Image (cartoon, rainbow over all chains, first blue to last red; front, side, top):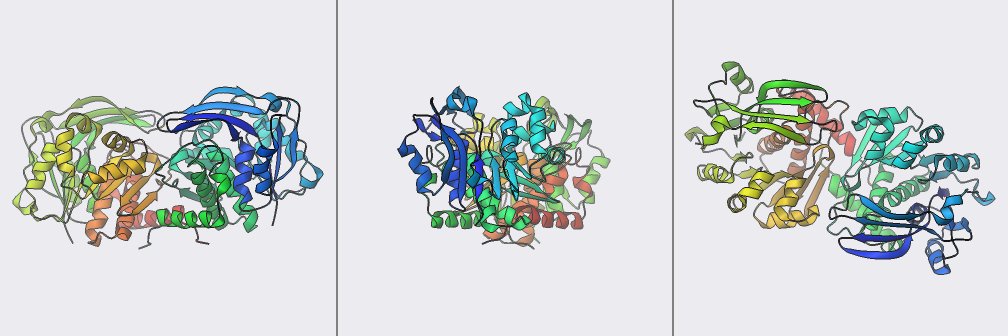
Length: 303
Length: 303
């Protein structure tokens, strides 16, 4: 089975929602991604942690057989994010961001990772995303995330990264901002002309759209009766998506559609608890079961 | 084939979007609904029009074989609505509303309509919705729409109507307001306890959720490259939905799911032009073709 390399943040999050709060709990894009993907394929993680990152924290990676050779520990504190969500849980309000060791992060890819076939460039500086790509021999699929901050402040660098990737995974607001188009079909046309052949647009509680070749795939989000904490949902989605692609080993439209459903399934589990409390305790039967429920959710008969 | 009775507004709309504008064009919930439903089943419309409603305007109903015995013409002007949409086309801003003949509207159901098997109570005063129901002999299915204005000002009357219907078709904001729950699954549980066994929640460009027995069906909206005017999309959706149900003659979960897709298909055509310009000029092949495209949009393989 092919390995997935992910580069991104490892963080301690403090999150408050109308349903509770959690302080200094494990988070970060690389963390959510790699635990999610680990249910499908081997994962190599690249990131930086501080001296406050204990063996217990490392344990989550170990238990999921995630290779942490690329998780560098340096002097200083781990990246910290503090945010809260309103009653509708749709968008986080950031209360505090402390980059700490992330400030001087310059990802170095261990030799043992350079053969990784699948690469996911988490939401970091596009200059660093390009530098990671320089160090990978011949990836089969490169996917990438980004955010409004980079679209706004480093558009040229971002465009250089986009020209080198196969798949972009962003939310609808970012797609509109990057393209300057309100209509998502038109936004997709413009963004795909920048490089990525495939575009996946996340719409939170409303689901996902994928633009691939001449085909569009639309999937609703899995309706949940209890949503506790949306933090990490997007990265968890990307982890399930890339995980299934690496496991399947092909990039057919049919496999991509299934991968999006697996991503949605993983994200739906993740938001049911704070931090990785639920995501890190799943079984394959859980995942399989919700995949089937997702089929029930969306299926209708042809005439 | 069973007939559908619809009661609602017939209007002249003045609409401005970033892509153009139209003044005093045919609109209204009963109009959009009945033209949409007419592609599937016979339709009986109940509403009120003013002296300014010409034979040419009536022609749209005639061409679609819609029975207008219940469309009463009285002294005064037809209901007028003026609104505009921003760049993202998600919510109308009402600039002016003139009830005119609608102000004293008290729907009387022609004898020839009282056998209608399918009834759609468009978004009017819940007291009038109940009064319509009093006049129908033994409907097979009663569906209903409402809005924040009635939830706010006539909740008790609305609850009396809800206790008598089988299916409620509202948008997500209305569902949250009516239930007092932000989570849509919880909102659905509360609303269904008020009466309607089936709840359909419209989410505009994001699609639809249906709650029916123990099953949830989720469908994205059909992605369009050009959206000109969302006016009437919800009523057009309801028309396709009820039209297919009346045509099929059963209320199985499978038929309901198809009906939702037909509703989505009709709504997707409607927003591609101002007023009923596109909706009133479709062929069965157009509708069938987009139903198949909808299948392509949402399909994924089981494992």
